[in-house]
Structure formats: structure tokens, C-alpha cells
Amino acid sequence: MGKYHHGDVRNVLLQKAETILTEEGPTGLSLRRLARMTGVSEAAPYRHFDGKDGILAAVAISAFERFAEQLEAVAANVEHHEERIMHLGAAYVGFAVENPQHFRLIFGRERPPLDQYPELREAADNAFDVLQRAVTSVDRKAEMTLTEAATAYNRALAAWSRAHGIAMLVIDGMIVPPADQNLGSFVLGLLAEDLNAPTGM
Amino acid sequence: MGKYHHGDVRNVLLQKAETILTEEGPTGLSLRRLARMTGVSEAAPYRHFDGKDGILAAVAISAFERFAEQLEAVAANVEHHEERIMHLGAAYVGFAVENPQHFRLIFGRERPPLDQYPELREAADNAFDVLQRAVTSVDRKAEMTLTEAATAYNRALAAWSRAHGIAMLVIDGMIVPPADQNLGSFVLGLLAEDLNAPTGM
DNA sequence: CGATAATGTTAACTCAGTTAACATAAGAAA
DNA sequence: TTTCTTATGTTAACTGAGTTAACATTATCG
Image (cartoon, rainbow over all chains, first blue to last red; front, side, top):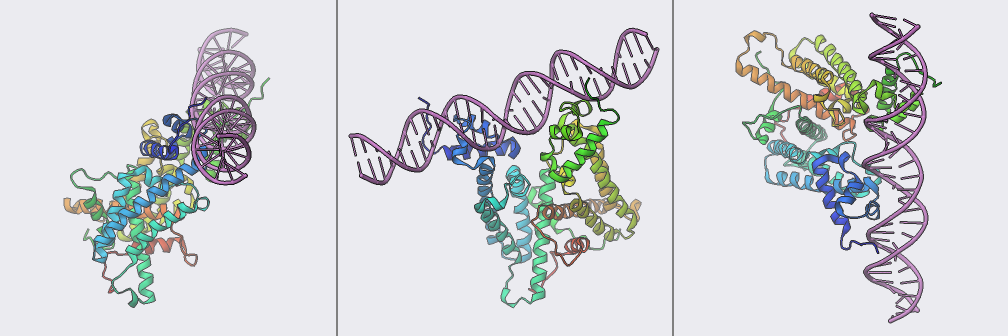
């Protein structure tokens, strides 16, 4: 005479998992607690997910999708190439700051192995593609020489890692963005810094 | 008639903890396993450390120290300011790549809270100081105007986050450094990329 | 020597992830 | 409808982790 929950327990679990993850991160997310919170037996989640990694993978997939969407939106709205790179960087950091736990989940080592979750790998590849395309794309792509292509690729890597570094240091509290400036312009400022420029100092 | 281990169990534990951490990271480090490997009772570590965080803190402290030393060594050996920034970045990434688990430990969220381990906070501050000083220092510091100082600080942040981003993406396998080039020059290349330069593309 | 602190041991508690064995519900097949 | 099968839920158990309490032994210092 067990009380059965019907309807989409799976979705409810996912929903609650999102909540817990947002508040406490991947480590704080415990399947047992999740089950209790959902009002379901402690073994129930295993009927819907491939264990803890399974749930994390599902959450990571949707996180990747949102991430990719937001980057895409920015990429689509900025015409000028160099400017687009900059604004992509700001959006990249913006996502990380607004969703630190999700950002950590998709990039950190708590992320379930891509090999074991094909859909996760796909979501990850998609997100990277958005980034790479937006950063690499040029106005007259067909006319690119090999050297130019190599330069473009290197530039993509550089842009990517710069955004990533700022994002990481900010969400880890190592860099505290000035309060009198919005995050976007702060990031744009950092990205615009030219370490090679002469200082006169 | 228990077999007591004498001598510095504490140091042996730390040593083994280093080994386990290097191989499996903070999550893989289990106090019980550590105790078993050391041939000591499972509760013994608690006599020497403030639980798991205590051990992680101790390991993190020594990691910070090594990190700071290596950066310092580079900073001391490169005269030219801009060049020093670049080489510091390469050293930063070098440390991360050679000691990925330690790097993750000192920068990630597995790191015990700085508030609870004053020596850890000190070690962290020291490492950051080396970086900031080396990056901010100029030949004629006394003559710096306020504006110049602000610029220098911003540049320090930019340099730091660039190195950090490359380090993170490389140790997470998102960026794979080309095999036909040593890591240092690859990093220097990325750091030298000027996203603002015209491309002609 | 003898008291006291340091350090070790065993045993237990809580919580997590996971799985097995069982129960019920829903839906297709007869 | 009745029956078989599958999906989904439950309980109970196993393993392993972190931690603490209670107890034992050793070191050390008066």
C-alpha cells in the first residue's frame, strides 16, 4: 500500500536538483536528500537517472544549452568582428557570474565524463562551436589564407581563455569587480587591456 | 598491546596525502584510506589534523608556497617589465600543468575556507603578493602617477586572469597545446595575441 | 617516580551512493 | 475483460566515507 507518486517524477527531480545545485553546488547535491525533498523513496531517482552522474549530466546538458543560447544571442547582435569577440567575452563572464554553480558544473571536474554521456558531449560541443564560430568567423571567410586562418584560431583560443580566466577568478572571489561599475564594462575593460603596449612607466 | 606508530605520523600522513592528492585529487583523498595506507588506525589522523579540511589545508599551504616560489624565481630573473609579465604567465600555467591537482586544490572550491585556516590565508596572500608585485612593479615606481598606478593594477588583473584562463582550460583538457611546441612558447604566444589589432580579414 | 598531555586504538554514529528484491500501476495482447 | 509485461515505485541492505567518544598507551616533565 505504498503511496505512489505519479506524473513526471523525473521532471520534479530534475527541477529540485536544479534548485539544490544552484544553492549548494554539485557536491551538496545528494540523491538521498533530493529524494526526500521530492517526497519520494531514496531509491526512486535510480529509476530515472543513471545514478548521481546521470542527474548531474542532465543538469549539465541544460546548462550548456542555456550557455550556448546566451552566447549565440550576443554573437548574432554584434556585427563588428573585434567588438563581437569582446562582447562574447563579457557574456561568457556574465553567465558564469549569474550561474556560478552551473558554470563550475559544466567546466569543472565534477562534470560527468563526456565519454559516458553522449548527449552531454553533444551539448558541450555545441556550446564550444558557438564560441569558436563567433570568434573565428570573419567577413570574407572564403578569402582567408592559411596563415590568416591560423591567426584566427589562435585569436579564438586567446579570447576564450581570457574570458574563462576572468570568469573563474571572479566566481572564486579572487577578483572582486568594482562596485561602481557594471560587470560588463569591467570585463570589457580587462579584455581591452593591451599588455604589450608601452607604458612610459 | 596496540602497535603504536611513533615518530612523525603527522609527516607520514602528509606525505601520503600528497601522493594520493597528486594521483586522484581532493575528492579521491579519503581519510580512511589514507590511514590504512599509512598503517595506522582510521581515527589517528584526527589527532594530527582538524579533519579532512585540516589535511587539505596543510597540503594547500605547501602547494601555495611552492607556487609562490616558482613565480618569484621567474620574476627575479626577468628584468624587462612586459617580458616579466609574459614569463610569469607562462610559469603560472606551467605550475598548473605540472601540478594540476594542487592547482585545483588551491584555486577550486575544494579548498578549505580561508577564514578557518589563518596559515592557509597567509600562504594564499603571499602567493598573490608575489604575482601582484611582480606584475605591478615598475622601474620608477616612486614616479608613478595615480592614473599610472590604476593602469598598472588593471594590467595586473588582466595578466593574472589570462594566465589563469589558459591554465584552467589546459588542465581541464579543453585546450590541447600543440605537441610540436613546448608549453611555454605556446602560452607566450597566446598571451601575446592582441585581440584589438587589425586583421585585414 | 608519578601526574598529565600527547598520541594511538576500537567501536560506534550518521550520511552518502548504490543495488537487490519485492510491490504495484499502466498498458498491450490474448 | 483477463493476463502478461514493463515501468515505476518501495523497503532493506551493503559499502564506504567523515567524525566522535571512550579507552589505552606512551612520553614527558614536575
